[in-house]
Image 1 (cartoon, rainbow, N blue to C red):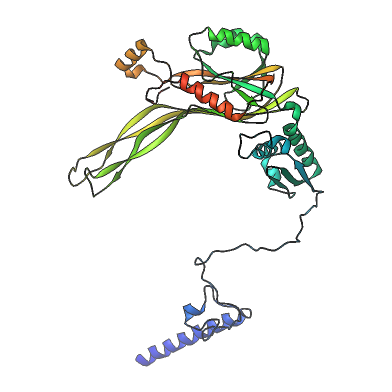
Image 2: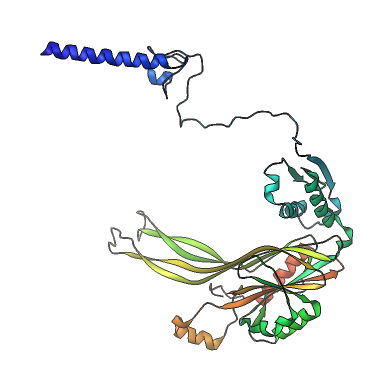
Length: 417
């Protein structure tokens, strides 16, 4: 019996050796098993263990222990011009030298070029280069793109547009029925952002509409229409305020009561970024409007079970914010002799509402009937023509800060608009 088992074991071993030898014989020269290396098989560095083909290559690094690298070459040493790309350098000092209130004024030119040509134009085929410093903008692209870049640069360095400026008026009307009488004066324009409407008005019609809106008790303005934004520059008007809340609890074993609150912060209010740029003939203008509006409607309380040794039935209260947000990021084109009017629709009001003793008393007694305030948000954009001296972002920002400190309440922020 033992002899038969011995013969069977020997036969199986021989078959295994034969099968392994056959597989190895069919592999190409220099082949090694996957994951094979000198350390795994106990051989010397660069040497294969007994029974495996030797190789002169460096030891194989196990997968997952070293970073992988893409294949990199030096290339031809010159920029490819397979689609007729040409190199151009534009002098932008007429714009950057007069814009002394910005650290990197050349960035405004780059941003407008990217808006006009599209970001993918510079990150796909054909090969393109766009770079700028305080004195020079360098561009490498096709003649068609170079023509677009030259037009944008000319609009910035145009000395005739130096003293031109724009004004903004940010306002809200609780009831959107103001449209009923204003429709005959307004010409609608296409707007891509959902829920946003746009119109063009003659300047005299715009002044009449604003005067009629100012008579209403539900009309409110949030900035000074006297603050000016120079052509080719940008301004940010913001009433954003931070609001802290308890968003969670972190268990601790070193201090009582066994946890510490995890605080969160939400910014409430509105932030408006406005960047205008006039055409070369000074007959029309383009503007990028970026508006972000946040409001916390209410904080929903939630109880968490967080037992500890001292308090096994302990429950911790946290808050979950219920928010409403509205955003617009779009570019508009309109003739200079008209006023551009944009409506965000009925959205959260962009700043704290005025105190009303009657409604505040009712809402405090019956909080279930208190709704977060809503209003039709309006934005009037008007060209003021040539102004002297030219407006600067620093002066506009200082004016905006003065207006905010004078119009917004100085009391602590309660997170409700």
